[in-house]
Amino acid sequence: MSNNSTVPAALANSSNSYSYTFRGILARDADLTGLAPDLHEYVADGRMGMVFDHPLYRDIAFEATLARPELTFPDGTIWPAGPAHIHATIREKTAFAEQAWNNRRWGEYVFTHHRPYRVNALLRIIRAAGISKLWSLVGDVWRDSEGPLDSFDEWAEIWSHAYAPNGGFRKGLRGIMSAADRRAYDALPEVLTIYRGCESEDHIGGYSWSLDRDRAEWFARRFGVDGVIGKLEIQKLDALACFGERNEAEIVVDAVYLDDDAIEIESVMPKTREAA
Image 1 (tube, helix red, strand yellow):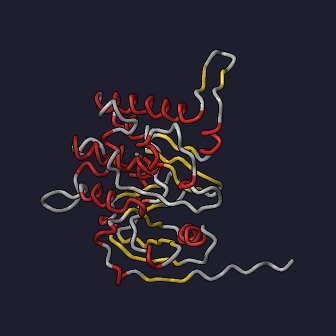
Image 2: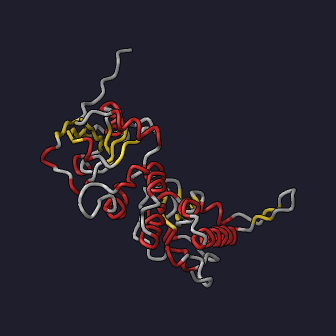
Image 3: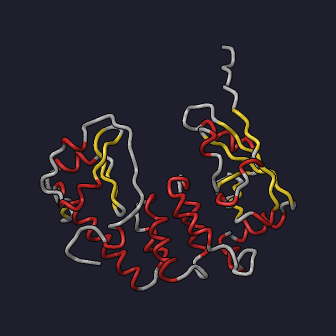
């Protein structure tokens, strides 16, 4: 990585981009004097004003940060003013990420990144070091992800490593699950009925499904709309993983090979208000 830029070289060509609903000052009208030019692209419009969304640092109060003076704390710690604080934070995290990379501390490298960019960091490691000893980390990043569909192509590449050259799954794939999840998987019947709740039918073909229909319905409603629920029967042996730690009874299936015609679609009925 170059020391002449505030953006780590490994992140400079990140394919992820994120949009925000505007409620405040437009980023294009902002005075970014003092902010390094190579960081301007990470300024976006947020719900309550500008946000700064960089792979190593996110600031949802970016306007306040720009205007903040230098602060000195009782212990003598100095918090740099405005953009200098952002520059210092990114330099510090970049150095930490470089050290973690060089020492092959892969978990530290990945989780130094802001959440939406962790899958990109994970994929960089897999491309450089292979995946055979990384399935546990893949599981950690998957469970930490908020919206895997936002990084569909990245996850498709990662999950493609699950398959052995001679067919079936690689032996190490079960390492993606905790011991408790492996026991839960082993106890499941050979044929599973799984559900997926989405805002619209356009998103029904994803990786993350659930054994719990009520949980799927929660996902179908979580953005304030009455969405849809997909229902599908699969062989247990076709499931990539089973996760129970988020109380979602999650079953991961390979969306690349899903048979859309086999998915039963049900519209979620509007909830009726109880009489007062």
